[in-house]
Structure formats: C-alpha cells, structure tokens
Length: 368
Image 1 (cartoon, one colour):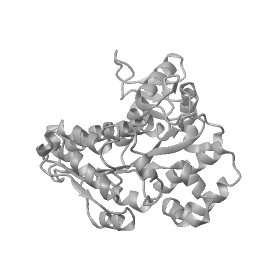
Image 2 (cartoon, rainbow, N blue to C red):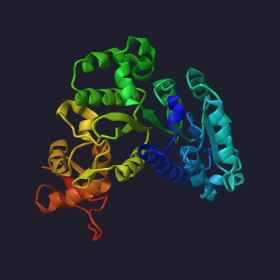
Image 3 (cartoon, helix red, strand yellow):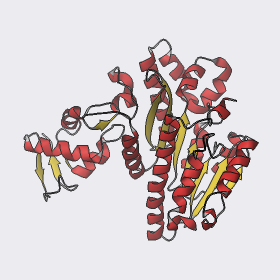
Image 4 (cartoon, one colour):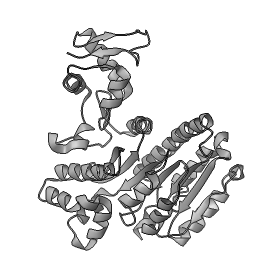
C-alpha cells in the first residue's frame, strides 16, 4: 500500500511537516494554558487530535508526529494534567505499533489522561462526533495520504469552538487530477462544496502555475465561507523542485495563532528573498494568483503597498501590522524596519514615544 511506503523512511518533507506541527503545538499549548489560568471559567484541559496517525515510527526508527507531540507535552509540567490526546488510524497494524511506541515512551505515565487510540475510517461519522460536542481547545492534525476523508465539514467541526486550530495535508497533485475526474467528484465537492464547479471552470486549460494558484485560493476561500478565518498554506515541491506535491494548510480563527504559525513556517522555509521567507518554494507568475502571489512578495514592495493601502489614514504600527500582514509573507519585524525607513525618508509622519530598541508598537503613523 502507498500509505505504508510513506513510513519507509523519514523523508525531508515529512520531517519539515512534523517539525511545523510539533513547534506549533508547543507554542499553541502555552498560549491556551496561559489564557486558562487567567480565566478560570474555561475548562482547564486542552486536546490534540491526529486522525491519520500512522504507526508512530518510520521504518528507520525515527519518531513521527504523534510521538513528537507527546514528547513535547511530557517536557511541559503544565500539560501533564491538562492534555487529552486522540490518535486515529484505520490500519490495525498502525494502531498496534503506535500503541506499543507510546507505551515505550519514558515517563508517559506522567500524563493524567492516557492517549486514546481509535481504529476508524475518517469520514462523516467522525465529523458528526465532533460537530455534536462542545470541545475543549483542540489542535487537530488531518494528514491523509490522498484526499479521502478530508472535507470542509471535518475541518469546521474542529474549528467551531474557542481555542481550536487545524492543520491539514492538502495533496495538491492528487486533487489537481481529481478536479478533472468525474468519478471522484464527490470527494472534490467535500473539499470545495458549492465552489467546485466554478473552480473547475476557472482552472480548465490554464498553465500549471496559474492552475495551482487558483486551486489553493479556492480551498482558502471555501474555508473562509465558514467564518472569519486566517488561512496559511506551506508548499512542498518534489525532489526536482519543479512540481508541487502538496501543501500543509493551517486554519485558525485568531490572529495570534496566525502570527505564531507564520513565524514557524518562515523559519522552516528553504529559501528567502530580502529576508522574507518563501513559504511555498515557488515564484509567482501573475498578479491574478491571489494568495500565492501575495505570499511571494519581496520586501522592497512593502513601502509602496503601505502607501497605497493606508493612503490618508493614521494608524499605530501594531494596527498596521495586524491589518496588513494577512495573506502576506511579512512578519512583525519587517513592518518595524520598513516603517522606520519610511519615517527617515519622509514618506510618513509619526508621533508617539520613541524607543532605542526600534519602532515601537504604539507609534502613530500618518500616511499622506
């Protein structure tokens, strides 16, 4: 089976993906537990759900995402009594080996709640379970080999409650082919819902770069129809670097989660330009490419963007950053650097308390 071959070795892409999930879980869990301590009315528990967990270890012995997340939790005393984990895989052999790998973890009994291991096929049944319950803050990871079982309904079931975020594997190569195959139309409709036919019409006959950009834009827009969501894709290429194989897509309702994940993905990017991370390893081919084009903008475009987008307005640095950085590759430090340069060049006027450390969050920027 192809799914079994996936675990034969720790491919570089798999390691990057696991690292992103592990790092975000560590940061997200600290943010959530900090909020729970301040607001005691919230349940003092957090959750991690992995619906395609695999066997726990690659065949070379390296640990995969479930064990990396558990190791992170074991190193944080605040999580010992709080964390509830669910690991699912429809393969009985994977379930057995994952159970053994978890049992072998040193100090696993420090966790008050033993990891739950399910043996179910992912589909509407699991989506329905999570739709019906009011869940604690959960980080969900949905990592199917192809696309079967992945749906907007499932993603939304995890995101509906406070503190919940989701990461999912978007198998671009398979989905790109599936959009042209009527036999798998129901799977495409599970992903794009009412947008499916319009997307098929738009991408038909387009060159590969534009087709990919529209498909990724399509899934992002479909996700956002469920509410105000921040969507951040991270692209993976094949070994030649010429073809996209898949994206890891992050979805959250909160800017803080978006900000943290953007920092993590930026550090895991293989290339950058002018200090701005690539996120996707691909050049943007046309302005019409929406989200993927915006995430490939160079830093030297930021001054012109700010002058255009905030013409005649007065905002603080932190408000500019929070409003403007969505769907763009720029981080907080980039806005501080560029706004300081714009002030020195006379492109904007500023007022507020200055700091020797840099451009402070509360400095008011007045745009012509």
